[in-house]
Amino acid sequence: MSPNSRNRVFEQLKIDEGVVYEVYKDHLGYPTFGVGHLILESDPEHGKPVGTGVSEDRIASAFEHDLDIAISECLVLYKESWEGFPDEVREILINMMFNMGRPRLSQFKKMNAALEAGDWKTASVEGRDSRWYEQVGDRANRLMSRLEFV
Image (cartoon, rainbow, N blue to C red; front, side, top):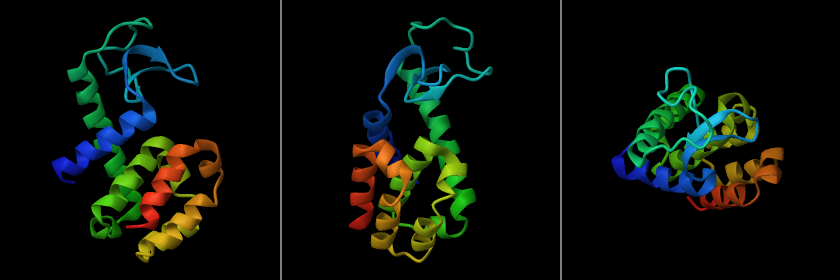
């Protein structure tokens, strides 16, 4: 993935996930910071109290790590097809992977079949026909609208 594409994903996810420059508890009560980065035992922020500040550089570093994981998960899910997808499609799928993870994204059988066939319009229709689309609202609508017109 090109540096420009990585940067576009970062900018998109800052809008969709938000950016928090301190440790906070996510909607499930897990310690988190930055662009939805779940704090792990290996993170220097582990065990720090809610409200502990986190630098912009640290947020960028954690995001790069999380982005690499999301890309790896996309490679596992889409296998050889991944490299053939246009950058726009990859950016949309990485955003979705960030949002729901591979177990949930892999359940989009009809959408994924359309993606494998390179039928972006049908993939967008199938993506709209999901609970995720209803739950996520504007984010999902924007992503599926982008996919429809690739």
